[in-house]
Length: 213
Image (cartoon, rainbow, N blue to C red):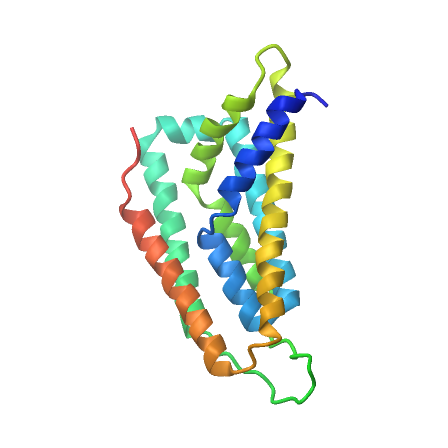
C-alpha cells in the first residue's frame, strides 16, 4: 500500500462520516429507487460512482486549485450545477408514478428511463464545484509528505469513490426494498415530490451561496 495504515484508516473513517450525511445526490437516489425499483436504483448508484470518480480525479489533477483561484469559474460552474438541480427536481416533482394492481408480494418495477436516471445522477454529482474544492482541502490532511504524492492521491480517490458507491447503494437498495411494502401510488407521488422539492431547494441554496474566500 502506497500510504500508511494509520492515514488510510483515518481517511476511511472521515469519509464514511461525511458520506452518510444525505445530500442532493442521495435524495435523488432514494426517491428514484422508491418510485421505480432496483433497476433504476442500480443505474443511479453507477451514476453517483462515476460522478464521484470524475470530480475527485479532476480535483487531484488541478481543477480544484483552479476553481479555488478563479471566482468567475467557480460561480459559473456553481450556477450550472444549481440550474441542473432545479431542473431535475422539477422533473421529479412532475413525474407520474403508477403501480400495477397486483396481488403478488413482489411489487413490479415501474417503467423508467434507466439511462436518463444514470445521466442525472452522474451530472448532479460531477457538477458540484464545492465537492471538488472540498476534496482538494480534504485529501492533503492525509498525505504523508515523506511518500510519493501521486500513488497516495490515486489511492484516496479510488477509496472515496468506492465508499461513495457503497453508501449510495445502501440508501438506494434500502429504499427499493421499502418500496415492496409501500404499494400506494399516492405514497410514491409524495416521495417523488418531496425529493424533487428538496432538490429544487438545494439548487436555490447553491445558487445563492457565496464562495468562501
